[in-house]
Image (cartoon, rainbow over all chains, first blue to last red; front, top):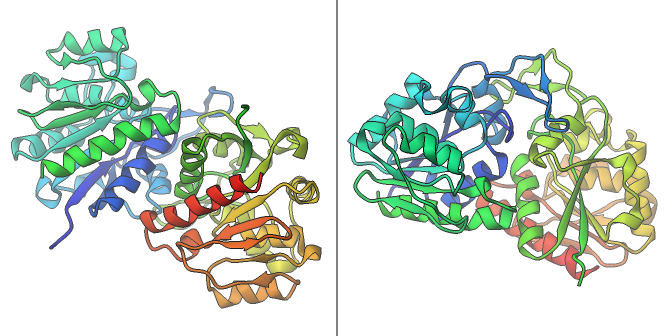
Length: 219
Length: 219
């Protein structure tokens, strides 16, 4: 039997300006352990900014989201423009600020900000084809903005400000613990708080493994 | 009981010019799952070079090993100069070319090249204090160069060229599968081939979990 193909949409490499590395790697680990094939992808665009992860200060430098994401994918990655919903059976978005800075404008403009058009198209095409979408940490904000017309149910943990911003555009936010998942069976969206709650890698691993399991079960 | 403290020596962020991200994250995962506390560290030095992980070409750019390693550590990282063998109970070095480019000169000059002096001192201090050192992938080359006088037994998988270069300086190389570990009980060194063999993350995870388990058992 052919392996299930699951897109993993990255947004750079590092929690403060890109994809959260632990969440991305754990997604790849559980997909591989459960017999699925990961198709890593990212947009070929400049990062919103570059953060020195030691000092948390902004650096005057330009980095590309696809090129930096390739570090997590060990070079095996596609430009999201080359990926169609027909090519994959499901899609998972790890978190990290990159998911809310590079894939959408959520971190800068809130839930009324724009979503990257290729990201928005792919997420909508997946759900419209009945294919499941998983999202971790802050990435549900970008998914919610992309498909707000579907009144999706999802979690980003329990942060009231983020939850409120999402509820304001029609998302139905559900409070959730780090080892739990929120499942929108109708829309086929699976989310977990991951490092929105933490506190540590063993904790976020539990919710991420459940997202991967549930997403694969929905294919 | 206080948690065992295990140093995790990083060498950047990305397989081709830094620490191998999957290996580093899996080390952090298994340490946390088994109740140990990870103390991430890296040298505060420029990377040997910067590689575009999408094209594998060198980029004319300067990045700092400590600053880039901080991406994997989510900002919780120390300059190796601040860490003494008294501060930790064990030390683990994930692989990636950074371990052989930034922690030593192995990738450029072979086993006769130099080892970063802080790295060399810490590894020797650990072993001389009877504290275990683990190393993954190509990192055993740097460990072997640092402690060649101890005639350490270790594995980098089965690459004949690398094994030969290490044997030439007094390391006793042992062929090992990706889900196995080589244990030098006398010197207290534990190694596994990881991505020197791969092929995929679920495979390297098996050997890395065994290294973490064995290292913790030796404390």
